[in-house]
Length: 196
Image (tube, rainbow, N blue to C red; front, top):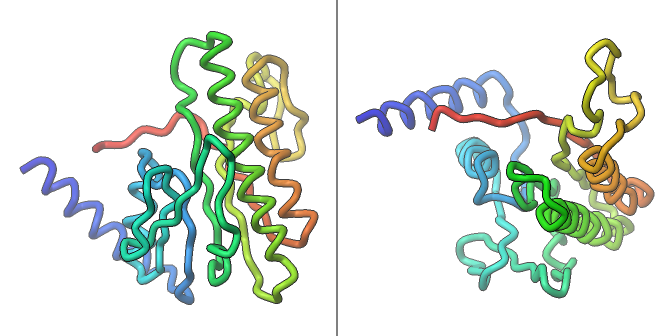
């Protein structure tokens, strides 16, 4: 009952959101669709009539709107971006965990490599006349620790520490898309929680 009540509240909030924010229907490629944010975002977007395609690591099912990418070879077919209006990149190994060298390496590689792959794919399609956008996840870890007394804005420099360096490299990996004229938005979030 609690789960159904939660889903009912979520659906009602999603419908209210779409009623207050009508928009043209878009085709969206979503990387990280199976994560906490990705599952909620996919439901919100598809509930609003947008075509949501999921970038997946397993064998893709085109009928389900999936596009396969191979993290081992860091490749996917940029032709899959042909009719895509927006790429939303939430992919990456979870940051939560002990900050061992192995964990931080996984966090860095999964985020930076996936972002560079998508940004390069978007850049390769930039000349076809279709306006596209990249919305790329990032983290408030960009600012580093111990900056409580400082006003932190999008223009503030990256902080110190390994996590700040990873996040700075993650954001830098969007550069091929922005240099090719693709609109890029980087969203720095903190800890994400869900009532689910």
